[in-house]
Image 1 (cartoon, rainbow, N blue to C red):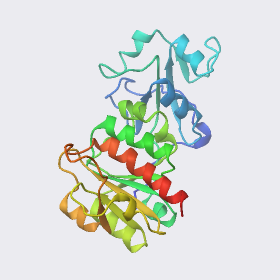
Image 2 (cartoon, helix red, strand yellow; image 1 turned 135 degrees about the vertical axis):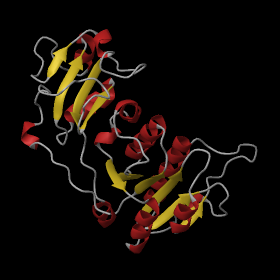
Image 3 (spheres, rainbow, N blue to C red; image 1 turned 45 degrees about the vertical axis):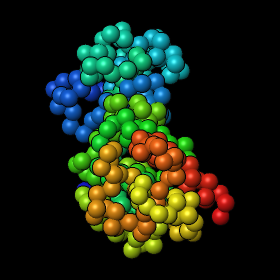
Length: 269
């Protein structure tokens, strides 16, 4: 279950240029690099000592928002016109005049996360980057320690996802696993209360969280919800009470409510 470590340059050399790469455009030969854009996401990436920054493209206005002197930028940064950023990023990227190319952060192993006291969020095939980014933002706001996702069927923490997360990908641990159901089994075996959100569940989320064990909340994909094997691996299933004339909540909204309720429950124990 432990992720295989990837070779990374020394953290002491994190602010080096991207020269020697085949191209800097999004979707080119990026290796382990990612693009992070948007003022809040870029500021958090630049401030994160765990990030190896390769290159930054900044408009004069964005540099000032990031509290950098546009006329005396760090060696890894380059002043550009906002339209020049469009050549490096996907169509429609709302970059706010800044894009940072950096090495991807090393995921946390599930074993290490399970050894802590959580809480954790688990995403079962939630694939929309905007939703995952919004979930990360809520996780950071309410003290969730990490987000568990599959190694393949989940988006990378970059681009629109990182922008939607508004810097949260720098502070909330990314935990990648091959099989979600087996990961939940491992958490249960380690004494965790694994709560799967399901609209048809009889138990309310408030009741399910009335437990002193460390807690992981599992969110299913839009439309299909939790897969049967994942639901079976949960300690219990719980619902967020909503009006009968509403079928369901968007997964990122459900995630926000769940982590708020988790934080509220913890403060009352």
